[in-house]
Length: 358
Length: 262
Image 1 (cartoon, each protein chain N blue to C red):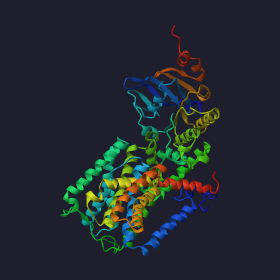
Image 2 (spheres, each protein chain N blue to C red; image 1 turned 90 degrees about the horizontal axis):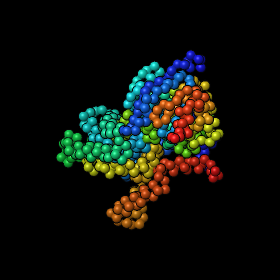
Image 3 (cartoon, each protein chain N blue to C red; image 1 turned 180 degrees about the vertical axis):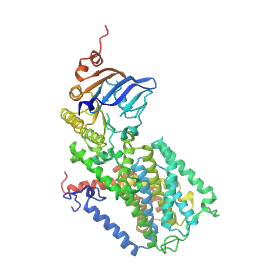
Image 4 (tube, each protein chain N blue to C red; image 1 turned 60 degrees about the vertical axis):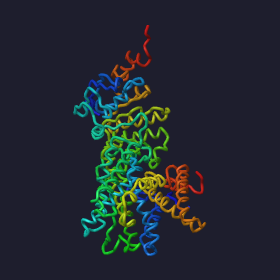
């Protein structure tokens, strides 16, 4: 086959430690990025942007954030929905306070706000693990959503209790609200996500990422090596929440346009993102994208197939779609508990020797 | 090693008492470890050997007693302090980071030598990249030394037992330790693997001048490679000295073979 790393010898540590040490991976990723940045914006329409690509990217980013915490650092969290809400409300309030500041900076600051909140709710992780920690993060979920629903200041005392995004220009191009073109929204989201993905990859392959994984795999040994559990866990909470916060801000600002906390950011959202990383693959950057593709695209595909192909009523199709998705999740978890990213890993190892079995 | 530095005391534990609830794991244990020596701690099962190592690197906090390490006396160590002070260890039951590759495991051992913050890490550029490559160079020396080049990129969870033990030694060596604590490095190994491991331990001691505290059950190995031995039984020190002295000690023979009560 064409996918071979044999014969690609590295002559420097720098080359060996590159993000994509295998030439084919490099070509593939550059190809995808070129298509995503240079081709898709010209052919994209309202449906593709709003129903498929933007939610895919936003959920991939949220998955990436949760994967940093759960997949890399081993701390289970069920508060993703609430942290997305923090990002969304922070960006909403910040745009209100500083309308003239660049939107990108405000989104970045929203991420930082979420990181701070995440660290606070991450404090219990220093004493409790596993299921117990999951319950503690559940407290964050319920408390924060209650807070955003209860305190009028957060939604500018709007009578509906909803927050609605203001029309924002980013370097003269409208990126939020109904007037924004699908291409502009898409490119804005894509640029942020591409940058943050690269950043995440850099962090997890360096010292900080290794200390997270060490804590995940064997916390006692990690501590005796000199890794401070406090620092490692809280930094994982901070970075993870930052990513989830940015995802929340984009989810609200670019994708939804208006949001109501009980609906947009409820516990289902937390589970949704958790499913993404479990199906995609815990502890894998690629996994967040594969998982998001699976969870976001498959229902759309199934629905289109059922309604368009078999003439099923769209209400019925909605129910069947949930059933099928559940069945597929169970099927995948039985076949490959380590997720889609692991399947890809196995495929790569097989291709290395193809066509010989050993 | 010159004779002078050999007599310099690196670590001294004095009348350590450690108990868990009503169980006395260690009572009144005192001994020292000199710079550059291979010091073995032996004793029957449950004698308190592993507890002793856990006290030395700060994982257990003794109720009484003091630990003097590199001239600094304290009532207990903290794990982080011990790591920064150059104490590294391996574990009786392998405690590798199973999800990570051999290379990453050993790189993690360099943790105390790396300091660049999240910002540079995120960019993977400039100082962070330089730091990563410098440490990678050292790690490659360790990998060469332990002859594990071929499993560099293999996740350690997939390695056989003997190699896992070797990777764990590598992770400890990556920290360039002053004092290396080895908790049964040869448990469950065949003769050949034991010979390899003994060779690595001795070479570490001779080439890097690393002081070694070793727990081991294989008496042949212990008598061969240690400079001095301390014997624990039921949490007490029952004998101490050179391998020859310890072998001849009646208390030791009684503890290992049992005493007739007639």
